[in-house]
Image (cartoon, rainbow over all chains, first blue to last red; front, top):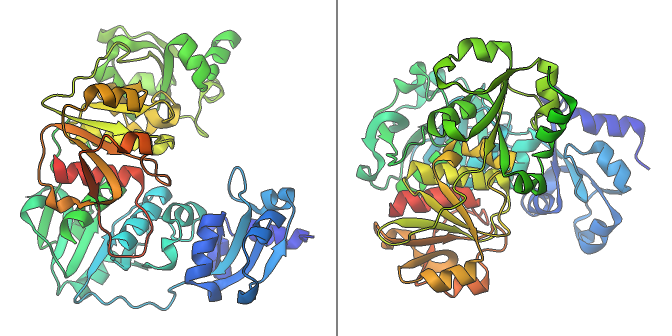
Length: 244
Length: 244
């Protein structure tokens, strides 16, 4: 049986403050938990699962710490409206990562605050083989349950590192710096690139001035219709598909 | 004061059954309502707004039917967790639209069930000037509040038409039919196109067999990393950015 204090502890991980204090985060649902078991089994602290999940997923040989719970117990610790078979508590990843910017592409996110957008961007980066993302401190928290959910497990593979962007760029702009902006060169004229930083800004405010001044090339995705803007994740998908 | 029966009527439009019966739908928040006022003022049946919205948005000359409501009244009729200044009830759009497939690009969606994805795809289509979308009957409802929200007003400009896809394709495959599939030609080898259908499938199941057999060209977006799939909206963004 799930103890009250444990339930309270897991619920508390819905808040950034507690995730930071505990160095833990939560992932939910069979698809994501399975991806995390495959990618980072050592980071899993505990799995809370319904009988049906335990019976259909034979992870006995991995010696995972699995606690069987009832549907109502799972719902009590879930961040989802409707809990989904399994919930895992994990230790945070990439804590000691030091980004290397040479000979590779790095995404730089300036104030991407929507958790769904951040999670989707992590997924897209993984798809295109961009394995590190630098976020400004006011981006969504990579361990927010909605980010983990939207990344569909890619959060285990892509390094997401939080930095003070202007200070970080000051130290790392010895490679080309591409910035997605409204007044840039049409993206089709850029061609493929193999090294550099690609900066994506906030959907409504774009890239802040202190960050934009490090751009060596401004890039624009030209639309034909009347829509005012593209979602930050869609813009990232288009940019990486054209440049990688 | 908002009457009980009116509040009940507006709440009921959260369900497809009632939207279909009434031929009405709901849009919320200043950004979307403003776009709808600009694009389709004649389709607005009623606007329910807080004093602050009415005072900062001077639409007196449009003779819009605006009813002032209190924050608690607005919250009662809102589909959002936290209501946002203004809610509009509109007559459904494009009801009599007949799609024309020659000399233009048309998106065809096979079982895109997530409302956020459908709304984002409508937004992307608008951005790239693709002004009609054919949906299978099991796609999300274009008048679902989450679709309207994610489309950010593009729902007023892009025609979304529901059809039985195999039957419809049988009548309209006299133009090239591109299908996004896993085993297709790399998208970069296709080049720009000006006419045809572009079929996007369900994220987990892809395009159904009965639909796929109409494809004249199968297209793939190749990834380098380990992520298994791209979100349907991201795939659409990439495809349109490469083909349009």
